[in-house]
Image 1 (cartoon, rainbow, N blue to C red):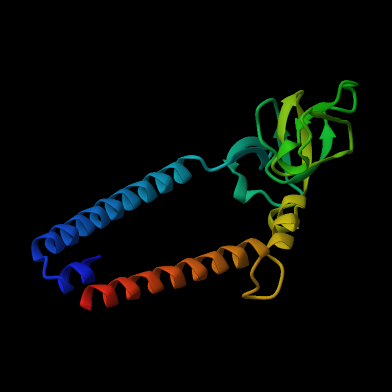
Image 2: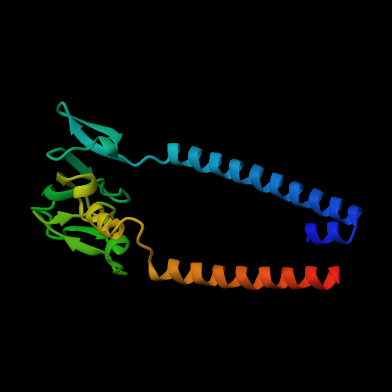
Length: 189
């Protein structure tokens, strides 16, 4: 539009359009920077915590510091920090430990797990309390393996959705360029 306005010597309209574009991009840049800072602040305050036994004492530590073999306390409302094996507390408790696994399996109801069963990272304890032994952390957890599989594939390979979006963008770009060239030719004749 700016090129067309310059071609027909409408410099005032061209200047107004340039001003609007710069103002819009400046506001967008400011808002993007501001929202990125807010997200970074939220991430730093929302680090997942776990209650683990260290040096004979139960301590609240960052979940990223959990290692295989640690004992962790799982109670109502806490997220499981790693793949764990239920160890203490549910052996005598016939009700078991109820966990919400919907993030992993899509199940709408909590699942009841008993002594020596595995609790997956990313699940949330809904009912009960137990101590569990950490078996796997990070990329070796069920959740980590799933994320690795989603990333797998040849480098640079595009999904079907990405190919579709690219083809739509190419078609719309060609149509737009054709229309602009046609309008310029019509204006210049």
